[in-house]
Amino acid sequence: MIQVYFRCPLEVAVGRYRQRVEAAAGRHPGHLPEHQTDEVLASWPTIEPQPLDLDAPLIEIDTTQPIDIEALVCRLYAAA
Figure (cartoon, rainbow, N blue to C red):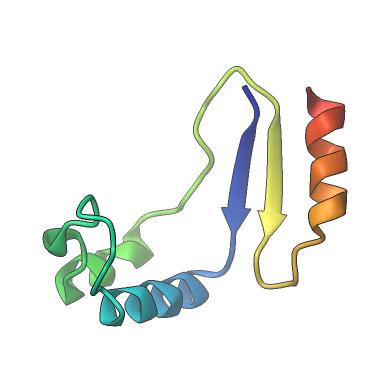
């Protein structure tokens, strides 16, 4: 197992999440409406997102920049 953790600033994550909520038609039913409220989004600044605590290699990706897929694949192969 290899964990790939995509990181970005909180305000970027909230903006992306709001865009997905607005385009909710056709989203997988696992995206529960109660997880998409303004109250839930308001709680995000109280949480410091972190990768899962796994006994596995961790690859972190900064999603504020374009992702170099070839480099990511190389990192995945190297971690495997």
